Length: 305
Ligand SMILES: [Cu+2]
Image (cartoon, rainbow, N blue to C red):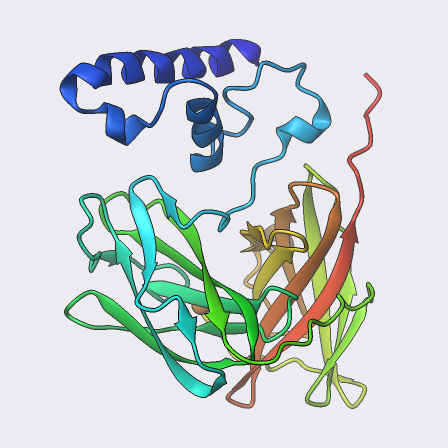
């Protein structure tokens, strides 16, 4: 496993050196440790390119998405870095593509060109929205904002390369701010009379399945409505830096079609031990609701070999 990693790192160095003469240097980035870091952060290379390590378990984990405002030449540009508190406050932003041109060509992901997730940095106030794109490349969406420091994520794929990307930007909301502690880990969440029970656990660096069972007044819900091409949509954010995890619906056993409840399943890989907040969106009775859970991710255990 070490050889391809070293070759990749070597390749980056070569391009950077040769690129200086041809103008490619700016695209590749600086030479040296920073280049190694951006190479590891910017691509899903399945490992830690640029690190000369002994492949310990912790370094196998992918970095979460959403930690950067700019990546691979794509930049999330908020029209205003500060907004007032209130309900339905208009947020306007662009995704700038290579060359700084507002991106207007997107590849659909989960039925949408772009998913916008806004969350206060204390992991309250979560909103998963689908903004409208103007012909000028400006996305607009109303947000309910309380005072504090917010993180805004744009989850999208550009039509040009179809790569999934999540960019994150800070948004300050003026006003008196009372940060809330992260809720304790719990396997049960209540929302609008629905009870959602989480089964399964996450382990750092290992693909794990999470299952959610949805009931209402003690009766399992078996007529969930499709939402974003699935019966549920899950976003996981790491406490501490709001690293954003890609979570995918799990394939039902035996190739069966997913059932409209009461259970929905997802797979993801947590990049590290620590606390995460999970936000599960599901649609029932034409209303989308969000159940939130705090989970503790355990460290990867060494497998004997
Ligand atoms: Cu979405």
